[in-house]
Length: 408
Image (cartoon, rainbow, N blue to C red; front, side):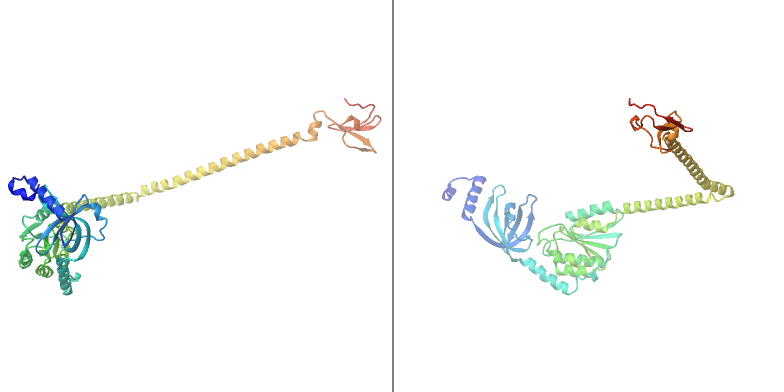
């Protein structure tokens, strides 16, 4: 569609948006833009959404997660960045943004530079010294909250205090939490709370937001009011990653308003329950000790002492009798075994004795040579007819003459 013909026909929103998209995306294929980072919002999908701005204008930007690997730093609100990318039109919202391909730091932004300079100035005056900080009361009776009366932060604080410490009184001290006049009003509320001694501890804060949204809590008059406060102050500005100069001057920094409420509220019901449990434990302990003493003292009577002595002696006597019986039984068994072994050895020895053999009718035959008995004859070949023999039966000696000898 030619742009020159636009006056001659009626366009739908989609057609007009498509013309704008072609013109912008075609006319700005590559851009190099420098601006201050603001409203930085990493998404759960991994993409980065943020705004680039200067003193007079701002533009939305997105960097997809596949390009984030090239980043060599962690972006933060207030940084001065130089980005390279192209324009993209989001038709459903009728908005345009820069699709960032590359991003690098161009130096710190004006806001961060201003805050750093203010931080150094106030720190040099000792407003952030740890010695100035006061302890937070553990069980405050009254908690003051300086915040927007319609903000989610106040609702979170009230819900937590109601649940965890119902006996604590809460005083809401309303103040705007962003805008040009917010800082002066917040400082005034801190001074008023001290002048009228409204509470035991003071929570000053708001929910999350961009660096610009949190600027009132970095105002010099707010920091000075917090530093000079006689009431302990808890700074509860934004989310955990957010910060303000009030964090350094306050007596305690809470990562969120909800965390601030938890810090100042003791769980009264839990504390009462713990005290009751301790009371029950102490009562049970004392009762058990008394019963134990009674049991220990009961045996110390005349009759019970004898029974106690016998109860101690009787097991020892029984063990002694058992040991004696076991020893006697073992010795008897040992003697019987030795006796059986002795009888067996005697029987074996007796069976091997020559006299035992002779008693069965056998005799020992020996030649008689030179008037003396020779060696025992075991073979008929060892003797010749006519030789004299000496025969020894079990008892006595027999002399005989050999008439004939032959082998069978």
